Amino acid sequence: MRSEVPEEVLRTPLVRRLLERADVERPAYTHLDCSNRHEPVEDTLTWAELLVHVRAVAAKLRAVIQPGDRVAITARQDLSYVVAFFGALYAGAVAVPLSAPDVRAHRERLVGVLNDCDADIWLTSEALVERLTEFAATEPVPAPREIIAVDTLPADPADRSLPSPVSPEDPAYLQYTSGTTRSPAGVIVTHRALSAACWQICDAYDVDERTTCVGWIPFFHDMGLAQLLAGTMHSGGRTVFIAPLEFIRRPERWLLLMSSYPNTLTAAPNFAYDLVTEAVPEAKRAEYDLSTVSIALSGSEPVRAATVREFLAAYEPHGFPRGAFRPSYGLAEATVYVASGDSDGPVVTEVDGREVVEIGWPRGQRVRVVPTPDRVLPAKGEVGEIWVKGPNVAAGYWRRPDLTAEVFGAELDGEGGWLRTGDLGTIRDGRLSVTGRIKDLIIIDGRNHSPHDIEETVAASHPLLGPERVAAFSVDGDEGEGVVVVAERARKAPDFDESEIERAATRAVAERHDVRLRAFFLVKPGGLPRTSSGKVARSAARTRYWTADGTESTHGS
Image 1 (cartoon, rainbow, N blue to C red):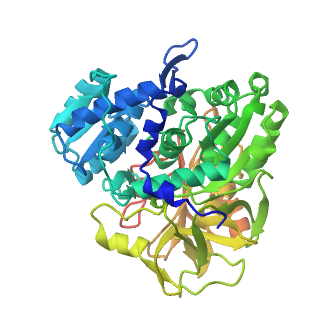
Image 2 (cartoon, rainbow, N blue to C red):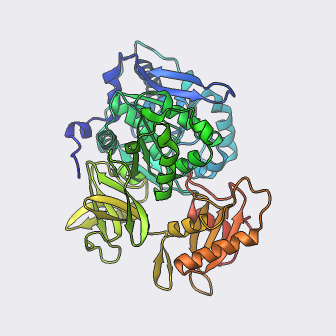
Image 3 (cartoon, helix red, strand yellow):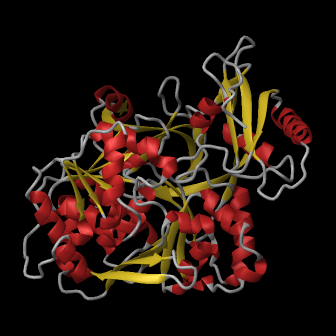
């Protein structure tokens, strides 16, 4: 552990930081609206303006809820979301960050969360009130007592109300995990854990009031909420953001954000670095000066060595500093942050015969690697399950005591309260590397296979396949456990031979892993289910393309 989180930080709810900037007219949060086909339009709140609007939301909430009640935030990614989230915390409510109902891919998840959290007050913007009213009437969700448009609430500059009193151990918000099932688990992030995580992030990446956080990750995802909302509230810097769909439509908009502001920090999953490398031609890259980037952290999914090499090769010539690329590791159950690299730049090492990008050191918490069978510390450098203990670890899962005890109540060397992450990794010379997920492991003939490794092999087996477009998973059947692969073909593939692609993938997996594929599905672009952060969802892919009785599903293709 590099540093201890100061006690003052742990005692201070994050939203109280707003009071320190009550008279500050510097920009705090800026939304770049890219819906206009020409130049993006800036919409900005200063710190002083933000406090006025947050107090207006809190005043409205105090009239209709009790402290500790859940309040759903279901809005588009704009300033209304920022005001709603901090307004809920200011009122002593438990915020539940969610997507807008018009994000079709997240609709089923939205239904599941609303049924789980019992939030009968929904915060949104005026533009979505009618749609949310229709959603509540037509979907199987508890009817809200009130839908509040935060951008219509009267702001009173004379309001000097303070944040509602809360204990550091009280829940600040419920962070629902980024699965695709109808019953996702709500992680209980306390005020103490949130403050600790913000301090850890700022300490790890040297974030202060001079830092501009830029990005597009959804606010309802732990990475987006921490990097774009909470981290800036802690540091007093500035956030400039766009909606996630605007990045997917035009990846170069992310480059515009990184190059347009001083001392920028950005964050994204591995697939985003692949996308911005593949989708932006060299001539377009030359339009952006990336020398202003101080931190570009990659996390939320495995960091691929090939991605690091290709991204740096593409953007170092345009000023991107190699030391700015920071592989990072975290999870919602630890609020968001566990460990990251330093300014020396990414380090690629080898674990069990394959390339792995080292993550780095933890900040303000302890990390151990424990083998899964007997929970005895492994020999130095061996792979085991990653366990975490620190003030940033959440209080458990909402209304799931058994799962909470299993995941958050592990004991090590006579000490309880360790978080079992479910991730596999190793620690060498104090540096953490993440190698995979326990639940995703594929076991064939007594040998463990990482689905990530098989996916990389398939992605490289044919020109019409590629990284972040493959899902590999195990299935049961009369022949025992087998491996199924689902792969998206490239978007620009006018003429292709599906059987040729299947043969190439099957041969590559057999040669590299000594595994015979049970089945191979080639699907159209966008055919793979993904999580809220854009990662391929293996379990959902298994459900979609393989039935419970161990036969091919007619759902796929």
